[in-house]
Length: 95
Image 1 (cartoon, rainbow, N blue to C red):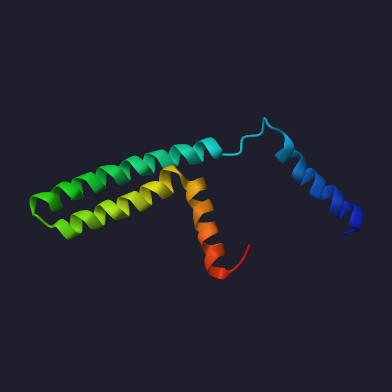
Image 2: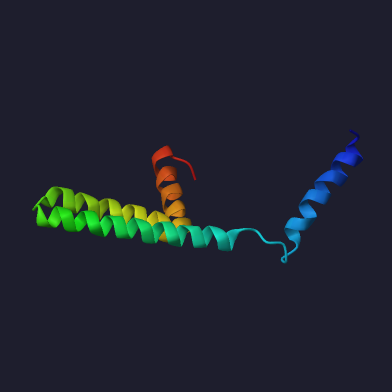
């Protein structure tokens, strides 16, 4: 394939991405994350109630801590990713 043909094929692939009318799937991703988050919360609440009635306090607090972490990943995923990237930058010595 010649260089100008390769450049033309790259331009053909990039042009639809610049069009704001082309669906990107971001709305679908958000919808799936909300559904997954609601299912996660329902399971977490049911298990927490069971641990509460059995008086398993360590398990209950462990579920709450895991729920906060996973809930943050589900509902604020972009912010959580940025925090984790910043934390990794601190650990690895990067900028």
